[in-house]
Image (cartoon, rainbow, N blue to C red; front, side, top):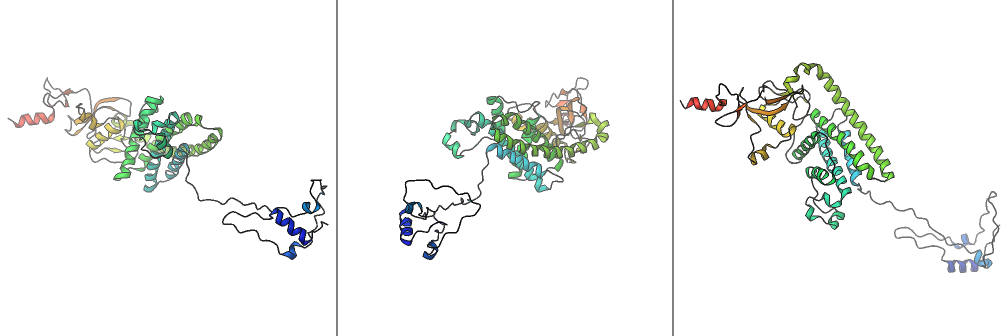
Length: 398
């Protein structure tokens, strides 16, 4: 039984040692026991307790038996939830969102966020690689680069086209083997800008196909360009997240493959009459007066619109820039139907390339001459080289 000191000894020891620490702000002070409780006999120790011999510490019995300072262990108060995503983590989280929004039968709202988040993922991950090369490369204007602004995140960063160009020209990374991914990324930027500023109407299969192409590219990009630069623990987390992205991509891919397999028999005898759809990029566009894509099921109202979309999205050419620079017209009048929907160097599903192809009547044209009056491509007949419009105009003058 432990001896209990008398009141005087107890009070003196308590006064000298300061038995209770002042707690942090916001927490109640420890409640002191009343006098009669302090003077009560202490409870016996458990019979199972191991007796430890008392060592000589040089203190008097009254000092040794005095109550020890009471330590209050305080669990750290939980603060508010923080929004904290590093660039690579942020980009991969966007990728997960894309696969979730495209799962099963996506609604229009899901398609919208799939486009927005896929573009966000692309831009974040491309700029993350630029940042690994040097922090200045993510500034929109390199001459305005400031470390203080970079650390604060207070600057205008470059967009996807500039990021791609800098990765190629400065870092030395070729992002696309054939250049097709460049077309996909340009298309993605257009869709995202349209959604943000004035709205967009795109069929679900087209969004899914474009997403598959870009997701496949980003999976390789993260694996080959970003993962090697991370610490071991970060790699483990990244691998788990990317596995989920890969699973989601496989699910979307299965849907697209199944759809293409169903169309294969229907389209196998039309390979020389079918070309790329400028929306879904599948070789499933049939042009016979009413252009329509059998994969994304979009029917075009006018062959001229299809021709313009083909030039911009499939061939990757800018009609505006070409005209501004004084180049030849990329879309001209068809000698067959006289509709302004004729495009040069159109690749057909069979693998052949038509010198000229009309996206209104669907007539492939061989080598054409040039109209002596207006310079448009036309059929040369017995040395006479006039397009249909110029011929009609000449007849009217007589």
